[in-house]
Amino acid sequence: MSLKEQRLNFITKISKKRRWDFGDSNPYFVEVYELMDKIQATTLKEYKRKLKLERKKYEKMAILNYIRTSLCV
Image (tube, rainbow, N blue to C red; front, side, top):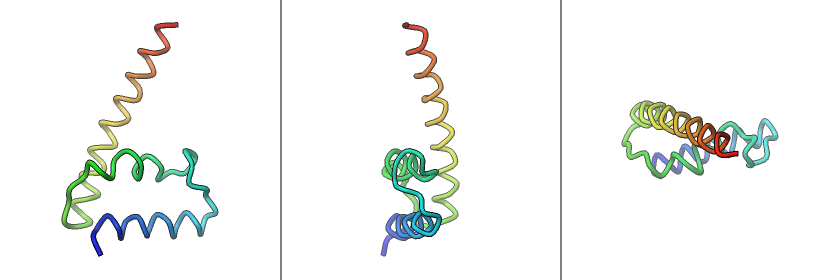
């Protein structure tokens, strides 16, 4: 089983345990749908380190996109 499959199983298990639906209100939503495909890692430690970097980039771009779209109105 690959690292991404293990991570996805963990996310599914914890989401069911805490009764989160898998929509954008789930805290793992961005990781699964936006970031997981971009991360290439062989160990969990490396995956989490790269996830942290990708999440920072994603949040920065989300803020910039929000500013750009709100200024156009």
